[in-house]
Image 1 (cartoon, rainbow, N blue to C red):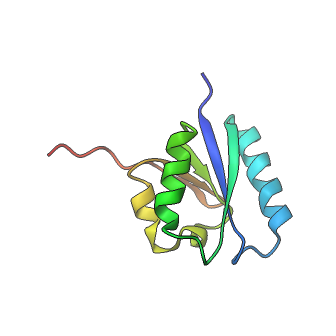
Image 2 (spheres, rainbow, N blue to C red; image 1 turned 45 degrees about the vertical axis):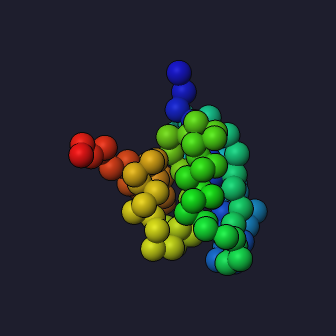
Image 3 (tube, one colour; image 1 turned 120 degrees about the vertical axis):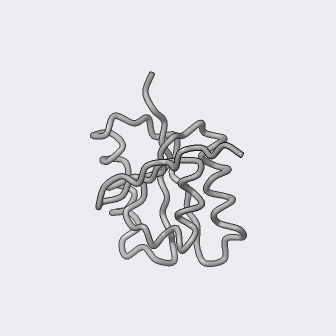
Length: 100
């Protein structure tokens, strides 16, 4: 079974949106991920971290692919409680589940 992924493009921060989309598609293909879709957000997106995690969960994605960690803002660490992040600098693994 192939791991699923979603891509993330931040329309307000992307220098070249089509280039970001192409990088996401290429990275998913070379990484062996099934790309379930690409989510676009901008500075007006309401609760972007919730939207990103919810979209990943709905797609049954284990990885979110983005060309820049800045697209997640300061909330990238919250995302790693649900998914791994695949960035140009490498992968940020999903945090282990905590037992309470």
